[in-house]
Length: 397
Image 1 (tube, rainbow, N blue to C red):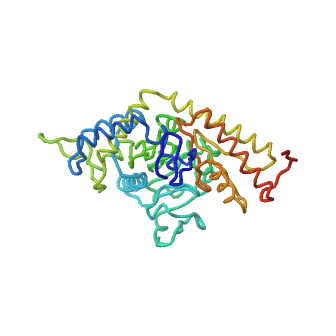
Image 2: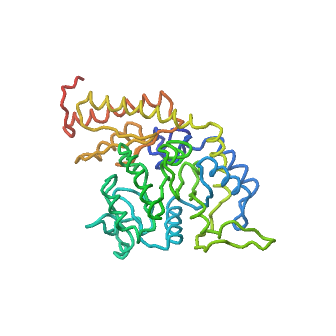
Image 3: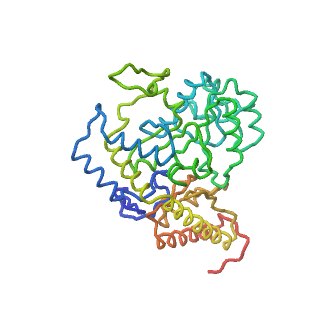
């Protein structure tokens, strides 16, 4: 691409696309929303200092804690870094090593989360270059399986954290509220940290993310994507019991107070980058001003769009359906010509990554939605015409 605005991208050949990938979920207000761009421009004019801490960091921290209902928070550069910090804090505070995650979840790029489940839940490397030894302290269990609650309880003495994507972006139709509540109960009972990875769901399904949407409070939650308004950022927030291990808890210079708890190490040169702070403050202020109606409206739009989309698929006699949650939807295409499906959608003017989740934004207009429905009808029709997709109905011209 060489430019973007709102819901639109333009490639280097001058072709225009309606974007459904939207930064893999980081875009909520559209590409380069004016209120974020202006905030960043003001900060550029003031200066971009690395080393000293900008006052914006405190303002963003207060806003994030207020909106998410967290006691304390800390910054990272990416969602992956925030997850790494959450795991390290959980191990520090619980003095245990094992981390439990679930099949098909995505938690970033460090070794211990690029794993897949083996026999008995043993974690196996999910990519070349990751040693088998990562499985010594990681378990990968079946997702949303209530039998796993007893497995966790039986192994609790060694478990530092249970980490979940509350709704997995590649299985948005699975919204396991009772399973999440059972996880909260067993982790609280056994002194295990419950980590909600809200890098995708945070600020998207509700101002307070999935914790607010499902009314389940985790010990730690990770954020990123939407928070940065298009700029790179990560954040970790949660209960003081865990967050205090970053700085020792409540204390101040000038008197006899001192750090109250032992600390671990987490840092980064670009953490609290002034441009990311400026963008994040603008985003959080807008979210606070708009209130929960902002997400509720977009959630309703997505539900209506996916309902119409599935009606189109049904009218074409194909088995493909859009699964959705909040403003995320996903096509689970187990088909030998799946790549053709996505390529045709791109040719019909939709920027969509193969087999990745799709995201609606506040910049998608009613006209944009109708254009996309037309493209979603045209692409499978062409596949049917060329014998690449089966239909159960007789289609007219």
